[in-house]
Image (cartoon, rainbow, N blue to C red; front, side, top):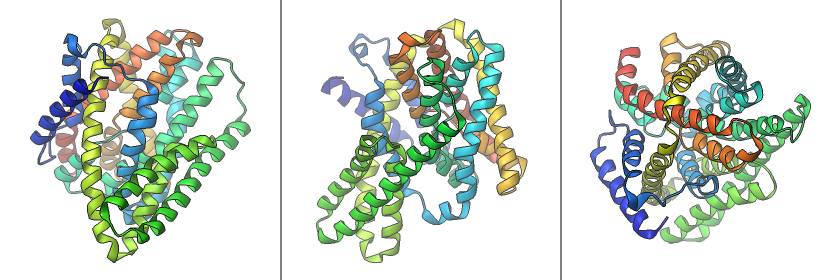
Length: 389
């Protein structure tokens, strides 16, 4: 991607974000992706390619960090049991049930169907959270959706990696081994993130210049991620944990209010810039996979995906924290697919030599993501008002 292309993409993103001043009914990611599909037909942009490493090592750490440190700790405490349950047990059940349903209606085997289900399970609410808040004023539902999204990214990577290895016969399946790997990768990443966040929160006291303090936050976002990945634990959860830790530490220190103010200003620019580039490039990348042969399968899988998520959300909330069917439906509908799903698709594509029907899997998964981002986000505001009126 050339510097000229990046500047033009940023300018397009700036125009779209300028339109989205009230953050009420305007689904920015959807608009950006649709514009990206249009840009794919312009020769100037045909050299743009999105790789799994670019998403994972450049975009995700920053986007996860800004979501984590801005997430209110009191909201997490209030809904911790439900958020953690949905992001762990919920996502595992989702993959199992959705995988079986995909296997029934698709030409791929059960293993490949589970891989597709793992790709389509992580959620990425992005602008949906702000739409829910503006449309209904319900902070609790918005916090549940956002909190689950931050944590289920780490779970989805572990599930995808395990299922992919089983499907390609790189290793057999053992529940005890899977559980051990899952706990090691997840808890290890969280531990590294908490330690890094705590250390940076103390170090920042020795730096009285806001610019240097912001530099420390950049080091924290990417440093915790890289350290965790270096020791083979979850970099995603490390970044999330570090962001939440620094939010917790500065929530207790009134004298550091200026630090949060500076952090908000800087990371808002970073977040909007990265989101603009990411979703425009996803639109450009997705275009070549939108073959008509995939659409019937994609629509069916999309409907399965919504249905399974609603059933699991309803079951989990009944056990953990009873909510009405309206709240459950809204939480289910808010589970859009986005950057993490695209990363997993590109990971699958990069290893497609070992997977039967990988072209079909990639094409259908991309089409489902497009359906999710357009249908769910465009209807989020009216559905929110209808369900919570």
